[in-house]
Image 1 (cartoon, helix red, strand yellow):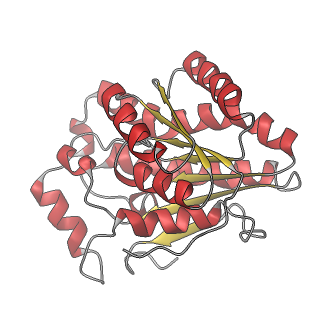
Image 2: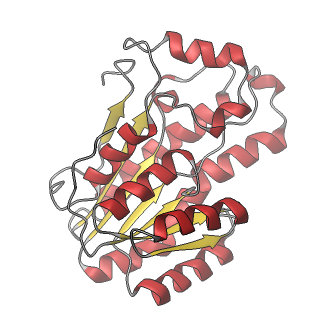
Length: 252
C-alpha cells in the first residue's frame, strides 16, 4: 500500500518482535520516515535477515533476546544506547497467542508463558527504557494490545487476559509520565494475517473474521501507519489512550 512520509527524522526507536509481521512493518515505516531502528527479537536468523533488508535504507541494528528476561533487556538497552546514542521511541509489539482451548484446559505453563511475553515483557522493556526517555525530555511508547483485550475471545483466555492487562498498564504508565513529555498509548488491532495465525485453529481464525464488519483482516501496513503516527511529534496531546484499528469490531 502507498505510504505518506511521517516525520521521524533523527529519532531512534526500539521495536520488539520487529523481525516479522506487524513489528517488521513498523520498523520499515520508521526507517522510511527517517528514524534509526533497533529490532529486538528472539529469532536470530529472522532478526538478522530483517536488519539486513532494512539497513539498505537506514541505520538499523538488531538485538536477540528473551524479552521477559530482565537482565537481557537491561543489557540490550545499553547496547542500543551505545549503537545509536539515545532512545526516543519504544514499540512493544512482540506477542504470542498460545493454543485455542477452553480456559480450564489451558496448561498453567502455557498461561504463564503468554502472560510473560505479552504483559510482563512490555513492563520489563518499558521499565528499562523509560529513564532514558525521561532524561531526553521527549519520548513515545506504543503498546500493541488487541481487540481481544477489550472483548475477550472465547478459547483464548490467556491471550485476552494478557492484552487486557497491557491496556491497563498503558493507562497507568501514561499518567505517571504525563508531565515529562513522554506519551504512552496503546493500539488494539483486529487480527492480521501474520505468523501468529500458525498458533490458531482454523475455527478460531474464522470466528475472528466473522466479527469484523469490514469483512477482512487488517493489513500490517495499516497498523504500522497508526503506530508510527503515534510516535511523531504531531501526536502531542494523546496519552493513555486506546486506539482502535479493528475494522469496526470495537468502536469504543
